[in-house]
Amino acid sequence: DAGVIQSPRHEVTEMGQEVTLRCKPISGHDYLFWYRQTMMRGLELLIYFNNNVPIDDSGMPEDRFSAKMPNASFSTLKIQPSEPRDSAVYFCASSPPTARNTEAFFGQGTRLTVV
Amino acid sequence: AQTVTQSQPEMSVQEAETVTLSCTYDTSESDYYLFWYKQPPSRQMILVIRQEAYKQQNATENRFSVNFQKAAKSFSLKISDSQLGDAAMYFCARVGTYKYIFGTGTRLKVLA
Image 1: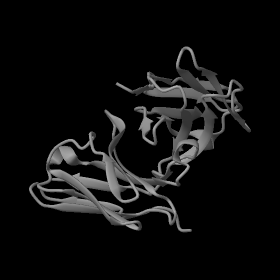
Image 2 (image 1 turned 90 degrees about the horizontal axis):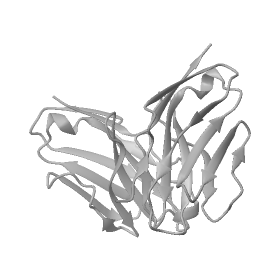
Image 3 (image 1 turned 120 degrees about the vertical axis):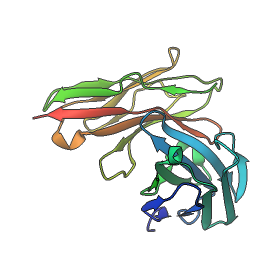
Image 4 (image 1 turned 180 degrees about the vertical axis):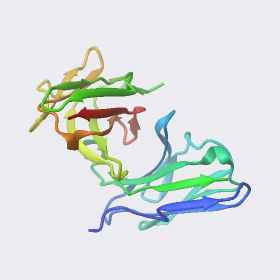
């Protein structure tokens, strides 16, 4: 398996634009997580899905952020409109059905810069 | 709030020496797992070691070991015989009900 695949690796956009980050989890993993990494806050959990259903979105900072998982092999995180303070590295991670005793497997992350 | 705290933003260690990174957590669950991840400059998140909360024995993986104190909710990582390749960000994480919560990270510098 190729691991968790995120695209793009880097994204530079202007304030006010819509940004869509993409993630393909490892096949067979039914948990999917979106994290945001900043120097100040470390890795913050934004939202996670189980079997394509959002379970906990309490970490989503504002209504400008939304996430979807239309099927088991694809998820998106959208920011609309984007702001400079959204600049961060965004990670997607997945884990198998025995989630609690298995580590989360991370993608390479998307570095988002909003200018 | 169920949090994970890493109180050392940055640590330095001389090559071949030993260093300990601290982590404390808060949880109301009795059954959970703890992890240490390493993040080199490539941004890749690499699992270093895991600990099951119901096990009293501290986990060990080669030069990496943990000191798990359940009552104190403490989970520190000890790196022995530090190598230049150990330089990275280290994150402590806890998972209870399927939700992985991470600390803010500790940047480890290894001095030659």
